[in-house]
Picture 1 (cartoon, rainbow, N blue to C red):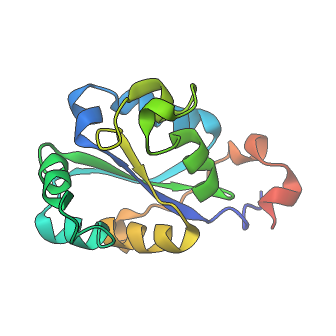
Picture 2 (tube, rainbow, N blue to C red; picture 1 turned 90 degrees about the horizontal axis):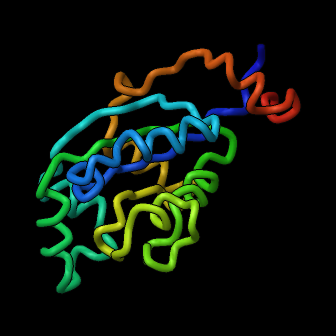
Length: 161
């Protein structure tokens, strides 16, 4: 079985509101049922330095302290997913940031109502996914393994891209 084309990775963070509401299993199931491969998974607490780096684009905004406090209010679960065009696939499953406008069937559309308390973070580009995976996982925490299910998730041409 040749799966050489399926190595794009992305980061998902299950946020404190999802952890507190017991949504971890429901969210993980969405990705697994889609056929995505979990190659990294860990629960962790985020510190100010990681949050400033992760949210560098808004770190100087007046609302950042509230985001930082929220993201440190509980552990988060970091997930590294792998698959063909996984960044785009995960973004579709996740739904738009303004949760109350997210499509029904998406994670945010089904489980959230807020912009900030939107249960999940997902990398927004292949470039950012690479940086974010490296920020939250060491090489030793990413597990490469044969997922025989791929034979039934992707056709041969997709597996060999």
